[in-house]
Each structure stands twice: as C-alpha cells, then as structure tokens.
Image 1 (cartoon, rainbow, N blue to C red):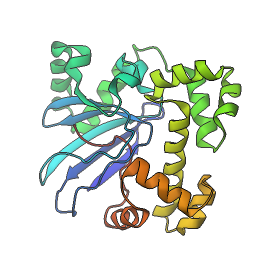
Image 2: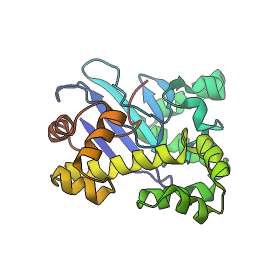
Image 3: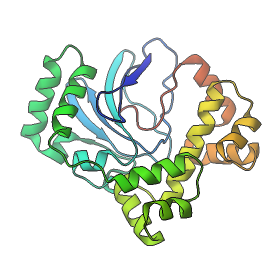
Length: 245
C-alpha cells in the first residue's frame, strides 16, 4: 500500500509505503528528478536522484516513510551536491553526523507517526537552511512544460556550460537527462489515466509511441505494458526515489 499527500514544506510530498505488504509484488521506483528523506525501522536515510529504476528493499509488511523534495530543492537542505548522491541510498548520519541523526530519529519516533515526524523534522531544518536556487526552479518549470534545454538556459540567464554544471549540483545529472526524466513522468501520468500509449507519447513530447517505449526501457528498465499492469495493481504508483535504502 502506497499513500502520499502534499507536505507543508513547499513543493514536497509526504508518503508511506508498506513493501510487499499483501498488495502484490514490490514495484520498481522510477526516476523522477527528486531526492527523499527516508525513515525505516528507526533509521534515517537519504535517497539520491535516480537515473534508472530502483527496486525497494524489505520483506512483507516493511514500512517505509519519506519526504520527497521537488527537483533541485534537496541539495540545499542536505548540504550535499546532488551529483554526490546520484543512484545512492546513504545513512543521514553520513551527511549530518551520528549525533544529529540519532537525535532526529528520536524526534521522529516520538511523533504520531513516522511520516508526520519526518515532516516536522524537515520543516524545522528548512527554517534554518538557505532556500534552493530560484534559477534552477525556473529551469525545472521550463523543462517540465516541455521546453528545450536552450530555452530553459535562456530563461535562467545561464550559458550552456553554467547550466550543466549547476544542474549536476542541483539535480544530480545534466539538464538533458532531467528533461528526459520529466518527459517520461508526464507520459506515465497519462498512462495511469488509461490514455492510449501513442496519445500519451505525443502529449508528453515524444516523437511517437516507439520513442516513448525506448525511453521507458532506457530509464525504467521495463516496458510500457508492464508498467501499466503494475499501475493498475497499485494506485497511486510510486515514482522517482520514493522508497528504500
């Protein structure tokens, strides 16, 4: 069972998932340009931005909770460039120190639930953290609307090399990869609504259905039909780095 809601932290999402908890097989988590603060069994971890599908760990009934940051928002919060965490799950203690991680884990444990505890911890931390770079949020907006990398760079007032370097720090990969991931997510949102594959592909910005199918295999490692079947078994379908260490 996967559930999510908007967080009081701007642009973030709070979610919980019981892995393998009687709701069929554990589905892969697909890239979405996001990073997460995770809780599992008293542990606090960080999920970096994914470039390929990630299969969640944990046996039947394993509870995960997380706070998923909008693309580009997490590096300022964690104090680590996204490129250093790409395709990784690390202990929060490795980033903030064992004493801080232990204290925050205790705060989560004292809350009404791990999701609520994570959100409270994140809100308190964010109040003392510099905000994310607004230029990178503008880049995400342009790319997520289907704009080109060149147009996104112009909108942010950055040269191509500047945009690539700052994208690595903010998103974990360059703007072209981010654009592909966001385009795939737009298409999959439509697929979950039972929009035919060809229509979803064109609406999302792919050249045709074959283009979308290639991107699905490259970025998610599964076929469109396999994804659609999984989405019907589990709604909403988790995406990006929404689970596990």
